[in-house]
Length: 102
Image (cartoon, rainbow, N blue to C red; front, side, top):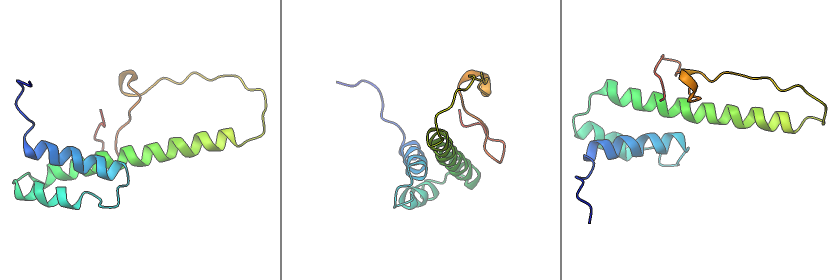
């Protein structure tokens, strides 16, 4: 039995919206978008969720493309390069609007 209260419906809608955008789900989170507006969530908060989700989606695509490009090149000897992660080592960066995704 779970003694924890359930997440508020607006939080569930935000998570679902972000996941739908980041995963390129065909429904695009439009149902959740309307639910958030119906719950009275401010547009700037909705826009922040959308911005972060798009950033994560786009960053994932860029990393996959870069990895594919690297692996599709002919084999050659290379020297490993150490790159420090941004944002204190968690590997996330900021969106084009300056919002951290972690």
